[in-house]
Image 1 (cartoon, one colour):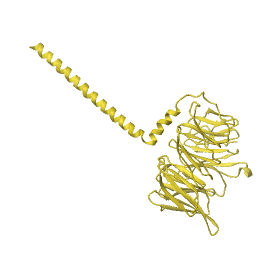
Image 2 (cartoon, one colour):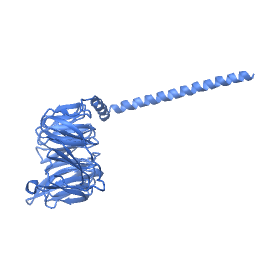
Image 3 (cartoon, helix red, strand yellow):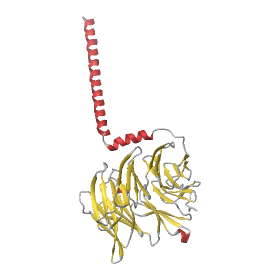
Image 4 (tube, one colour):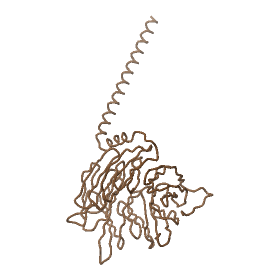
Amino acid sequence: MGKLTQLEEVRRERKRKRLVKRITGLAVGLALLVGVAFFWQQIADLDLATQVEDLIASFGSGSGYPVETPGGIVKTMFDADGQVGVLNDTNLYVYNKSGKQVKNILHGYNNPALRAEGGRILVFDRGGNGLRVESKSKNLFSITYDNPITSADLSSGGNLAVAVGSSQYQGQVIVYNKRFEEIFRWLSSDTVLDVALSDKGNTMAVASVTTVNGQIASTVRLFKFNSEQPVAEIPLTGELVVALRTGDGGLFYAVTDQGITAITSGGKVEASYSFGGDPLAAFDCSGGKGIAVMLGDFKENRSLTAYVLDEKLKVKGSAVLNVRPELLRHDSKGVYFLADNKVYCYTNTMDLVDTVDTPDARCAYIQGNRLYYTTSKKMDRVSVSRPEKLPKESSPYSAG
């Protein structure tokens, strides 16, 4: 009788294990089905589908750097969602980290300009009529306007804003969502100078100019897209807006011929910085917090002064430059610029930390600890050292 009881217990235990196994299998299967259903629901969205196609397009190994370049005049180099982008006067190129060319399109624009955000690359013909948005794998949007394009901007959320001429008004700004459906249009009685979108794309700043009693009068207007009326208007009387840029923390920077004004997305003037009568030579706020500017007249003084400003436009550091920069870049680690076939790297307090020889360089771009630069025949890559601050025993010194 005892043996029979043990046998029944063994059978019950086996049945219990089989039941648990079946239940577990059903749960795993159900989870897989839910996961697959979710995946296909998401893959139908343009953004995710494009990301998958971009990932596939980026696969493959190149022969390493340097790589031969097809020529042309390089306008800029940029971060193409972790890859290296190059815009020249005829084409747009993207290379992966092993040197494989993953994109090559002929844009055909006379004066190409570029913005890159969230895996999307905007190229437009400033003063011309053509505009296109690309991913690494395909064209997402192309349009030819009847009137010339003044400026355009992309948000990381996918919205696109285009300032373009109008036959009936001085200018207009058209906003598209990430599916390139028009969601907003503003008609201006003033000449539109520039446009900028907040990171999420739900706020837009527009700079325009007119004359009042013979004096230049610029205005920055902020818009939400549920009303054609601006939520704020910031007059900059006597100043000409050179550019509008989006900074960290929801700030817009209005760069003028006389200074910089930081504006919140709600329309409050957060801070301002005056150039003190010095001419603006260059500026950049494409990465990191704050903005970098170069002031002065190199032709007259044989020097320029570079400043790094924080988000509130307070000076973090400055340095006198005895070379003439061909470009200026500001990112989270500091400032770098190309001059006389060298790239000079500074911290955010404008301490020089590295100088890299770049023979015959026409343009340069730093990604991580790699410096990419183009010449008339090739694009090469070298290592660069960019500590965020100098060791205590080091001392700052000027370029040149």
